[in-house]
Image (cartoon, rainbow, N blue to C red; front, side):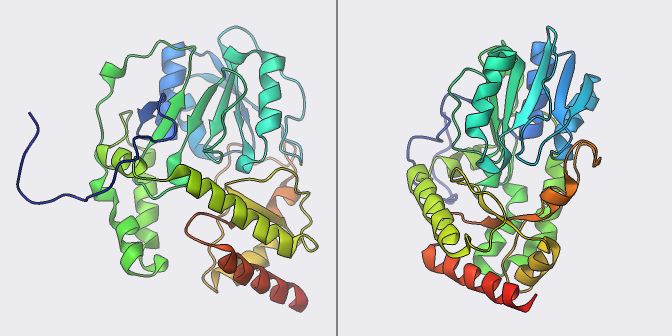
Amino acid sequence: MKEIGGYFELELSSNGSVFHDDAFTLNSARNAFYWLLKTRKITKVFMPAFMCRVMLDPVLALGVDYEFYGITCDYELAKTLSLKDSEIVLYPNYFGLKGDYADTLANIYGEERVVYDCSQSFYYRPSNNCACIYSPRKFFGVADGAFMCDPFGVYDEGELVPRSSYHRMTPLLGRVDEAAFRHYDSMKENEGGLRYESLGRMSPLSYKILDSIDYERARKVRVENYSALHSELRLLNEFTVGVTSSFAYPFRTKNAAGLRQFLIGRGIYVAYYWPEVCCDSSNLYPTDVFDETLFLPIDQRYESADMLDVANLIKSWAREV
């Protein structure tokens, strides 16, 4: 019997969906990958050299063999891999731009041997049955959580204990009342702590927050903001823009580091991908090309007028350099 009465908790409406309703709910993408590797008894993982270092953690923790593969300037595999039974290739749908290409990998390697890291492509649903790992924290204000879809593993959900996340909510709540920079250190501390949290279910708090979100509205706003930036910046942008992403707007310029600092100094926070990569080698991916690309925020907190402000700042910076 549930508790009745007493003081009120955080009150949120329920939309009856967390978008990935049929997925397993885990406490982090890292742990979702750990669970997949362990359950399916994977013996080797082919991983991109250009990827967040945290996804290597579960591979090392389980003692699974691994090999880095190269990435082209188009964020695609530099060469065809040779996979054996119980081996997989992990491919990130980079910045939500490579969904069509990701779909083709299943035809090359087989659905069971491809795992998509969808941390930057929450809305991506592949045209095949390949496993997918999603990180809603990259798109929405939650303190923990991941979704995993995998038809090829026999998973025992009974071994998972729900985690709590209320103690990680300070930076999320603090940003409502105060400027983001006041809680940046707290956010980084929480990110670091989550990296080392053991496998468990998504916290009930994060699930409740995700159940309150209007996902179609969020996607629509993101796409509109992407289009607004592209309309203003396309003549300055050295990145070949193809498909529209709901993650961020890619903007390439030779002095990306200078532009990033210029924007941060004016309250436009542009994330860096990634401070820690799996393999820091210029032989496996074009570091100069990737370092020249910024990913501008386009999320559902903003509207077209905000994107125009960002574009005007970039134009003013470009006139001065």
